[in-house]
Amino acid sequence: MSQLKNSVLESSITGIKQIKQKKAKLQIVALTGSGVSKGSGIPTFRGKDGLWKNYNAMDLATPQAFGRDPKLVWEWYSWRIGLILEKNPNPAHYTLVKLQDEGLLKWIITQNVDSLHMRAGSKNMLEVHGNIFRAKCTSCSNKIMLDTAPEKPPMCECGEMLRPDVVWFGESLDQQIIMKSYDILTNETDILLVIGTSGVVYPVADFPFLAKRNGAIIVEFNVDPTPISQIADYTILGKAEEILPKFVEAIVKIEE
Ligand code: BJW
Ligand code: ZN
Image (cartoon, rainbow, N blue to C red; front, side, top):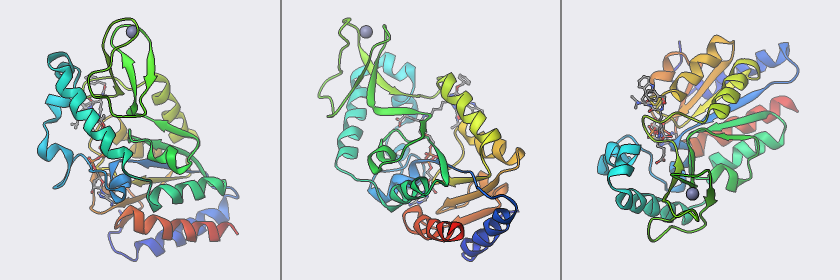
């Protein structure tokens, strides 16, 4: 059962110290969601200030919506691209880079499409829901990168329309990325940090459960409890941009 107190930060460090006594090199993996970019000023999807408060997911983030009105869908994505370009990574992103540089964090599995982990300098990253700065052809296999917000729906050189290279509701996730994620969560994860995700969107919502079944310790960072809190060994309540740096600082000290 997870502990939902603020002293949880300290008990999580004590718990990790105990695991460290049994295993010389810890393998830490981070699973991130939109809450990690909230501190950069990028809205999350759900919750009171979330994108889905003002926009209907089914009108904007499904292949059917794009089929009906590609211009509307591109307008929404262009607006988001413009917004993200004005923002910068926050301490939550940078602190994961530090953990990676220390050789402790092996992988970041992110649902975020905003490239902020990459802009902060993270490596070994799996973007399971795609990337908003990439567009793919609706007809051929062409993909292009976008460095500015498109003013009108971009077209492929083959003459067909390009679409955002993100995963919409009802679409399958990239099979290779999913298989790699399953492999990491099954075989390479001693500690899974679950940061800023509501844990309601499948199949990613199952990832912490898979890691747990395979023996990983789950440490969750969120401003509110989520369905993942039920299986989390520690749920540390607070803003990722504030609590994650404290957690990482303590973890790095254990290693020294
Ligand atoms: C902070 C904070 C701070 C705030 N610090 N924390 C099984 C069961 C039920 C349903 C399904 C199922 N399998 C499939 C489905 C359907 C569907 C689904 O899951 N629906 C549920 C919503 C019910 N899944 C799919 O369709 C997926 N495809 C699939 O499964 O294919 C196989 C299949 C095909 C056909 C039929 C059946 C199966 C695809 C899902 C694609 C999701 N796409 C989006 C949009 C991406 C593109 C874009 O950006 O436009 O991905 S939706 C949106 O949700 C986005 C996110 O990556 C994803 C997750 O959201 P996230 O990141 O967790 O954000 P929030 O807002 O939900 O939460 C933020 C959290 O942060 C909160 O907890 C806050 O408290 C916290 N927070 N500030 C720390 N400062
Ligand atoms: Zn094409």
